[in-house]
Image (cartoon, rainbow over the protein chains, first blue to last red):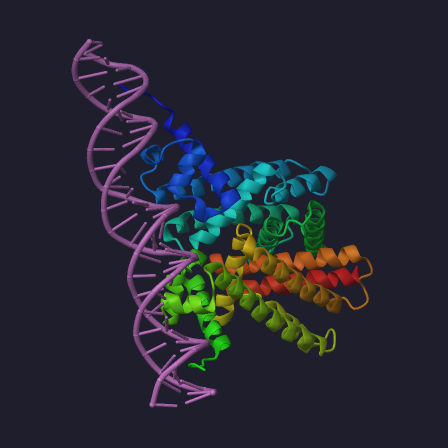
Length: 207
Length: 207
DNA sequence: CGTGTGGAAGCACGTTCGTGCTAAAAACAA
DNA sequence: TTGTTTTTAGCACGAACGTGCTTCCACACG
């Protein structure tokens, strides 16, 4: 058998190059030639691992969705292991919601890439399945979080859906503003908005 | 003097073509050739009114910002003319917030175009000034709305900023979801989320 | 009635893109 | 060593892009 290369690792390296290009220059610059350059390969080499440009983009979209979903899942189990209402519980919730925001370099890259792919999916049908998976996955996490924050208090399915969508929309909006208007959107404002929203959620239980 | 045409009207026609292309095929398809085709003109004709592709895009961005700002301003004065707490006041507020969402064809096109340009502005520096103007204008409207909803109750500047950003993030998130996941995001869910958020705002006054 | 100016159209060049295809290089089996 | 197969690299073609430049056309004015 010939030269053996860890194919999966190579694909991940290429995907990382895609991420960097999207974060710095946008999705439209993520062409095969640019990606190959960024990855230190030739176009033909990239095409050996990804049959077409579409396949590369779909795979990259799936990769970033998996990364985000993994972080959220980890943070959610951390929330579940704390006593509701405790200080640690509150911190775990804030940590979970912080995973949506570009608070450090890695989160910022993922947020950029995630946003770019979701918007591109509106136009490019090949990206639609991953976009829907992304939405379902994240909505499920947020829904479970809403239930954790209101233990046994939400009876109506409609309230759950509404509050989950409300929190999700707020998070996406915050992420968007943090990416697009970083000078107006400091980490402190993000934190204030999050705590204000959580207060409105606990008011739900009280009412 | 030669053949006289209403230059401003022509420019608006071209801009409308840009809007249609962005809404249906995305910003990256808004090339001079595509825009000229959509407008029923030749490339040279479009370039007669817009010196370059960048100038066309910047002008189009400004046009959609003006349209949205105009709608918001109108809706805000309508809110101001109602008695706070009245049924009509509530309806006027919902009407104002509804201007952010793709509730009809025209609003949907504007929302698509607005989103596309704002995200493109992260990469293309020529679009940055309009993006900042857009943000400042809309934030000002939302800030005034927050003050109207809490007459004389908001003393701390920080609370105003936080609540304005919170409402703005929610609106942008809702708009985004309505554009990207229309099957999950019915008008009813939008309405429920809006009323839930407004309830959390009035809870602010009560507390 | 010219005639010159603004409007409309198009050509041509260089660049970038995806992709089909070919060929060298590298590494393991025999 | 030789042979086989993966990996890497590259060429070439058609399409689409922005843009500099030129060309036609029609009409308002002297």
